[in-house]
Image 1 (tube, rainbow, N blue to C red):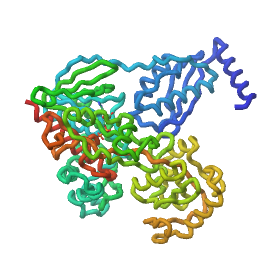
Image 2: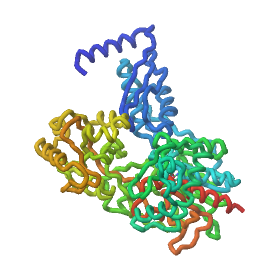
Image 3: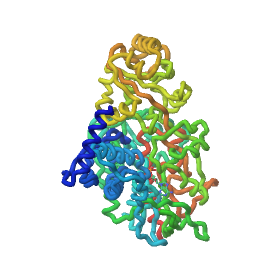
Image 4: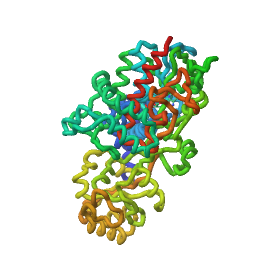
Length: 585
Ligand code: ADP
């Protein structure tokens, strides 16, 4: 801001605040959230916030729910943005506070300082000891499936979630769900898919390290699980479109409306409310309780430092997700994935519950198989969906302006190749020829705004401007793009054998984004059998203990295929919930 302007703003502010009769003023403030611009309209009256309205937000409505309720009220009550952020929604939370601060600055209003205590976790009125038939730990897709099925089987069930919001990775995932012989396949003329084919693809995709018995159950039960989601929960799927993820021999992934897990988690939460299943957030399971016979009969959990005991007559279902957001744990099990990696995962994916299961006798298997996603935001670690232009010909360059890998390689190969380059990052570059096919800029407008504002992405009419932005040597950049254009078309890439063919990149506009790999899915975890029963190292059952979803470790082998997580969590969540309810004597 130049001096004249700031004097003017200051003058306006003084005028506003000094006049006893100043009318309320409403200004808009904007900041960059996790998924794009977050704009609020704030009404001030005599320097005091009267009202805050969300004008524009692409934040996940479930994750950011507490930001727009609890935090918003705390900002109003304290007339301050100097307050705690909401854990699990830090990006959205910080953006919200910054947007209010921006609005205040525009209104010439000075907010209060240091009110760190303004946001308090609401300590719920809970008995220190409570008795249930089934205790489910972790409110992601697997946990909700288990809790709902247990309840419908007649059990008195509780669902515990350590974060302030439910959903876990299931919420922020794309939510696609692989189902052979699903109802959309005939619409697209796909008549020859079978659960057996799906199982073979899954086994091969995981380098034949998955447990075929468990995989078969997943693929055979997939259709019933999807119908349960559609007809019982009310999950809406696109009815004329499927995703075709790498490693699958048939197009078979159902797509939830909105292309995220929000559609599932919204419906799961509504069903849990309808069935009167208590979902207790901010409650972290710490230790499984066993009786003298070795049966798991409950769990000790904490909220705000207070310990609560949840007894479980039938048993406990672990649905605590993976450990991709726990850097130390990731590095411990796979030293190649060290501190350079951020994560695409929900902040609750920290895996302590796996150790809790281990202490109760469960075997942890395949823990070193950790999937990284190669093209992610270097600031937040989230997947850059806008760079999916890669599937239509966008190229990956290092800081020297060279291609260094075939852009359609497996996720692990790309990730390793990126980390070997200067600075451990790459640039993804495409032009309108590619963009007009992939349409990622038009589809992911929030990302486009946010990444551009963050300074990791730009749009240019020519390569000189791209070179200026990326600081790649212009001559080297020109040479690479000329070479790519010369090798366009399938089978012509002499350098890296691009499997679907390079494109003509001789003309703009050009788009470039900086990218790094992030930890994405942890394939290892608790050893289970096809009945979702937790097993010891010598293959024995641990009575009273079931596990489902990303916290288990036998389904995906070395590498989970896209679209298999949702199938896995719903199928085995349901099985575990029913079994735990049936175990109630
Ligand atoms: P899945 O896809 O297997 O359902 P998610 O990541 O979607 O896994 O959900 C797992 C949930 O479990 C997350 O919301 C996470 O915060 C929660 N969680 C993890 N550990 C614990 C714990 N110790 N106590 C309670 N909840 C937990």
